[in-house]
Every structure is written in structure tokens, then in C-alpha cells.
Length: 429
Image: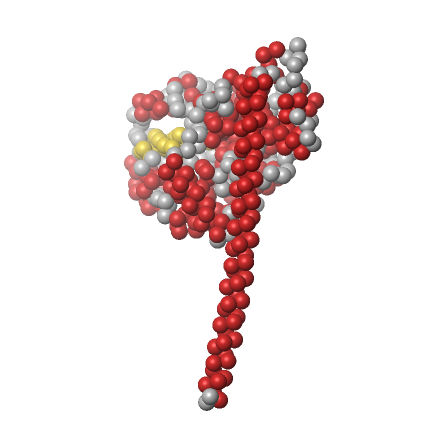
């Protein structure tokens, strides 16, 4: 049986020119036969999206021309200073950091560089593969949280029941360090699986969440030292390294105790984040139903969903990312890219490689020649553009190294000349 939770780590979605051409993948290296045998429903699904709304267009979304110009300038700044590593420099990632700093290039650059440094030092890329969080079920019992469905726009819904957190049981079930790593792995899963899956289902680019915090019973007594350390660590990570991924946050069941606490918490949040937060009392349901259908709202929040088969809504991880066909469509974007590169290098005709030759049994399941030709033209153009950009990146990096070497040589020459001048003055010449 297909299990998305175990396969999301292998999903690779190409965004712009940041991905390396020879990036290793745990997906199989398919040839002609494997593509011909690939499930026909995937080709059908790709075909249904239509020429004007391909997977790539849906996943990438519409780019604002003004934002594109700013991002191009920001990329150039990063190129010149040697901060573009070839990863995590796609349009949407750079835009998030620019928006975070109100398009102040200097501040955005510092924040982005710190983000890259943190990813390397913390080993973020390895966490989803290496972390075996066997205590997951036990942790959910003492810290109820999870993703559950989508809002009316198609964004994933994230829910936490803060008032039911038992911090003493939590630190017995796991460590703060392991929980924070688990949180990072969930953030990576949201970026790499949940958002793309929601985008395909909604047929538009999705890159933010709608979150609900149930703070019933929360007061100052809930924030012991371990609790403060945990929440501050998570807040720091989310604010500094995953900016602009929150669309809206509803804080519900806010009593007098929480409202006093909220006055202190506000000081740690920036103005952009505060504008997205709505603090509500016990009469919150009408506000939630404006943006969330009742079928995607758990019963404990006034909805009609119980997820009884999973032991509760916060255990289900319900959403488009659990749909095997959607996940396979995401995988197919990576497989198609690999097949194109592999077969092109072998000099095999692309039509043959994609299995679009005449076949009486294939019927409508295969792409038409015209559709395939347009698809391949797009692929060739995209590959050529990516190669040109990567060549430019390498040239700029090399130029930057040469400039630095020349600067060092000039500084040395200047020092020699200054010492010579001092010696001449000492001789009284």
C-alpha cells in the first residue's frame, strides 16, 4: 500500500535554476521501458491539467514582474558576494526573505546568509532522512498538534491545543532537542510536500498555512522554564528560517489568563506577523467558518470531523498530501526530468523515450504528438535557460574570486610601497 509519509523525502520539485543538474536522488533512474510501464493514470492526470496550467505552472504560480526584477537584483547581489550556493535560491524562497525585511536588500541578505549557515550547521537536509521519531504517538498525546485538511482557498490547516500540553510528560517522552528537530522535519515536509500537494489540488500556487491555536485554560502557570525554552526555540526557527509561510493565525478560547500572557508575547513578534493574528474568545466559530469548511474543522473546534479511524483529527495528518495520486504526480515531475536528461544524453529520440510512438493499446492514455512536442520544446528551452544561468553563476563566482585575489595583491603592493617610502624618508633622500 502506498504510504506518502515514507516517500515525501524523495520528492524533488525543480524551482528555477537553483537545482543542480546532477543532483542525486533516491528515485529510480528510469529508462524507456520503465516510463512505458509507469501508471497511465499519472499521464491522464498530467493531461487533465491542460496546456495552459501544467504542473510546473501550478507549482510555481504567477510571478509578479515587479517582484521578479527585485529578485533578479537580489540574486545578482548574492552572486557577487559569493552567497548563492545553487540550492534554496528559487523565486519563492528569495521573495520570502525579501518580504520579511520589507525589501531591504542588506537586511534580507544578512538574514538569508544566516539561514543558509543554519541549514548547514544544523544539518537540516539530513534531518528528515535520519530522524527516527518513534515517540511520535506518545508526543502527540501530551502535545496535541497536527495538520488537518485545507481552508477554503486550499491552504493546509495546522492546529495546536496549547491548553492541553503536558510539558512534564513531553520531556519524559522525548527531549527538547529531538522535539525541535522533529518540528524542523515537519516544516521541511510542509515546504516540500504539503504545499505542492495543496497547489495541485487547488490548481494554484499555495505557500502558506492557516493555523489555529486553542488556548483554553492557558495562563502564566503553563509556561514553566522547559515550556518557555521549547516555545522560544520553535518561535526563533519559524521566524528566522521559515518566514512568510503563515497566512493567518486564529487564537481561540482566549481567556483572561492568556490575554495577560499575550501582552508579553507580542513583544517577540514583528508587525507583519502580528497583522496576521486574530485573538478570539469562545465565540470564534463564525470566524473560522468564513475561511474553513465545517468538514475540515475538527469537532472540538465546532466542526463535524472526528477522524475516528485515526484516533482523532490531530493524529490523521489529513490533506491532499495523503492522496497517492497527488503524491505520484509530484514524483512524476522529477521522473520526467530525469528521463529527459538521461535519454537526451544517449541521443535517443525524445518521442521514443517518453513512449509516445504509435501503440494501438495506449489509446488516450498517452500524450498526443502535438502535446508531447510542445512539452519537449518547453523542456529544451527550460534546460537551455537553466544551463545559461548556471554558467553565469559559475562565471560570476570565478570573477569574484579573481577580484578578491587582485584586491589582496594590490593591498600587498600598497604595503610594500609604504614601507619603501618610510625607508627613503629615514635616509633623508
